[in-house]
Image 1 (tube, rainbow, N blue to C red):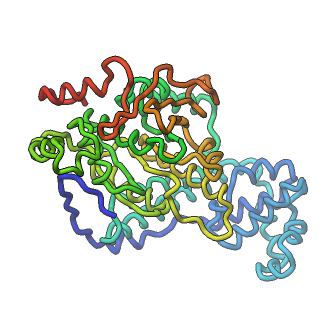
Image 2: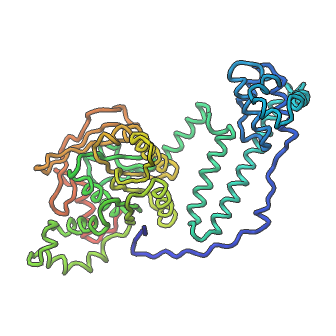
Image 3: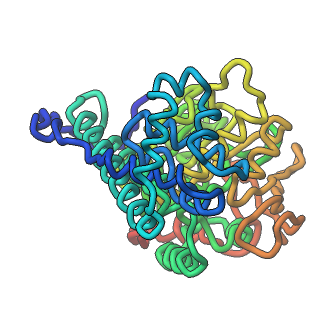
Length: 457
C-alpha cells in the first residue's frame, strides 16, 4: 500500500503535546442552559417552536438538560405546549424520577419566566459556546493524532478541518444559507477553478466541458474489455506531459502493467512485441530504455490497492495530496472497492461509495476520474452521485470508440444521447486511445517532447 515516484519522501518524528494544551477547560454555562430550557418550558407552543428550532443538542453541555431539550423538541414538533407536565410525560416516569421529579421541571420553568425578551441573545450565547467546545475538541484531537507516529499529520489536519466545518453546520451556521451567500460562494468557487486540464483527446474534452476540473467526480462506464483501463492510462499519460500531479489508484492491474502500455505507446510498439526477443521492437525498447526513463516527465504517483474501503481510499488520497500536491485522482475501477457489510443492500452500499467519492472531490478540491463496469449493481448509484457520467461503447472487433453523455450536472443536456461526432480510436500501440482525425493535443505534446520542449504547466 505504498505510493511510488522517483523521489523519496522523509517524515519527521512527532513531538509530544504540551500537557497544558491537553488540559484546556471546555466552556460551559449550565446556569444559562437552565435559563434557556426554563424559558422553553414556560412558553406557548408557537413561541417555543421558534426558539427550540434555533437550538440543537450540542448547545447543552449538561447531559440532563440535553435530554430535557430532546423531550421538549419532541413535544413542540407535535404542536403541543412544552409545559413541565407534558415534557415530564414525554420523558416517562423512570427518567423523570431520575432527574428529580416534577418539582425539578417546575423549578426550571420558574427560572425561565420572563425570558422572552432576551431568549434570542441567550440562544446565541449557547450556540457560540457549543462551537467553542467543538473547536477545542477538534484541536485536542489534532494534537493527539499529530503525536501518534502511526497517523500522518496531514491526514489528521484534513480530518480536523472537516470536523470543524461539520461542527459549524451543527451549530446552526452552515446548514441553511441565504441565496446571496450561496450565489457568492458558487461564483467564487467557479472563478477559482481555473483552466480545465485537457485529457489530450479533443473529442472527449468536448463532452466534459473542455477537460477535467477540480471538485468533480467523472465516471467512464462501459462493458468489460472495451478499453477503460487503456483510456485511463492514456489520459494519465497525457496529463503527466502537462506537468499536472496525478494519483493513479489501480485496484486490479499492477502499476508496471499500466505503465508498460504507455512505454509501448511512446515507442510505437504493440504490446506483443515487448515479449518477443526476436522482434526488432524488443531490441529498440532495450536500446532506448535509459533515455526514455530520463526524459519522461515524472508527475504521476501510482498506488496499488486490493479491495480497499472508501475510508482507506480517502486516507491515501489525503496523503498523496499533502505529500505530492496532486490535483487529479484516477481510479481504476469502482467495482474493486470493498467493505460491504452483511445485511447491507448492494444498491445502498454502492450509493454510499459514489457519494463518498463525490464528497472527497469537493472537500479536497480534486478532480476524480473513475472507470466503472456497466452493471445493475452500481449503475443507478453512480448516476446519482457523479458530476458527469459518460458511457463508452465499442464493437469488440473494431478500433472505433464512441462516448455519449448519460448524466451531467453542468450543462443543459442532463441525460442525453449527445455523443462524440468523430470517432476516437483504440490504437494498438500500447494500446492507447487517441482522436481519429487531425493533429490532436496528444500528438502535439508528443512532438514537443521529442523536440525537447518543456510541457506547459
